[in-house]
Length: 476
Image 1 (cartoon, rainbow, N blue to C red):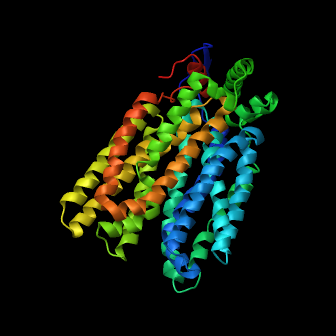
Image 2 (cartoon, rainbow, N blue to C red):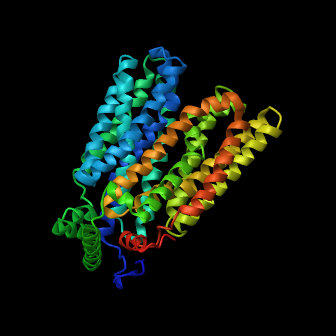
Image 3 (cartoon, one colour):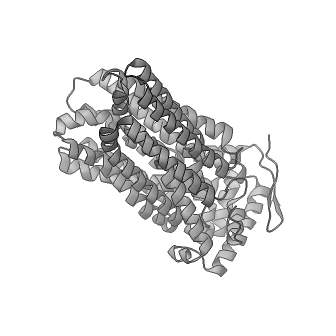
């Protein structure tokens, strides 16, 4: 079924409706290839959940160096999100993703063949640069190629790919441990799997187009139209091209683009909104579950053998939630509404986990009750926050500072991620599950209010319409 027409409110231009055909299949192929970056992101952040214990034995890690192996990837991701986000504005979205595939492969090989801690730490840092870069480059690439009517669903595929990557890491770790569990260096096999999607991303991106919006920002109008003709019908491609050219001209006149735009009040407001939702997403504690799920479930009451099996169920819930959001909700509910609903929902889940931990006696019933509410927390996060937040970050900023603006937002996201990852074991050791999720409950309430005050809605309008509305001061 073709989508209905989309109207540009400022110029009175009605874009022809989307119609099925080879151009739609080409757009789907582009999305599949680009989201290998998200798959790599997910696998690299999830693989240590099972690989860390054998790595600890082989390399003689203590608690401090074990924490370094985990956190140094997040530090690299924070750096990569800012540096590579800015690089994508200069080098191009396609070329940036191609470079990232090489960095993923180099980092993977470095970790697989690392003889000691002195090699594995810089290799993990390199992987972090690639993970952070992919967290910026893939959503921007998809949002700038996708039609308005499908932007949420196509852009959200990256977040689904991330949680699929994390789930695959849990599954492959369990399978590899079951087959080669008695081999020395089994953790190297677990890490080596990451080389396959890195090669697929590199080969695939060689055949993918650059985004038309980036090409227009560099004055390459004929190439931009040619790209649009690959992924739209001809009438739709020409209408979108006119809209993009019009906005590019307005940007040139107003000299927008880059860090100097932070002097403009509405740009600062958008950056504040990006920072709020980025930090809020991490303060739900989602990655405390993805990084430390096995240990968390042992604290809840599961045995050492049962906890890894129960942990896989959390990965499955993440994939189910991401799929529900992507295929049912993302383009039907306004982004602002779904994010605020998600923050309220996760805060309620935190409260239920606290009550279960504080009021129920130790035993299987308490363990399974906490598992159920943690699984519900993961499901709510994936349905309402992970996909919408990443899509929203890729939509908020004007064209010529989109890479920079999203880079700043994702930098803050990764720093918040590192803070949660570093502090979670300490919080659990001091306050147990009750104190830890009580902290998340308070933070959730605060950030629900901040998001309600700062976040505009970004869905239902083209990127050009959004930018024109924001420039007029319409930040609803």
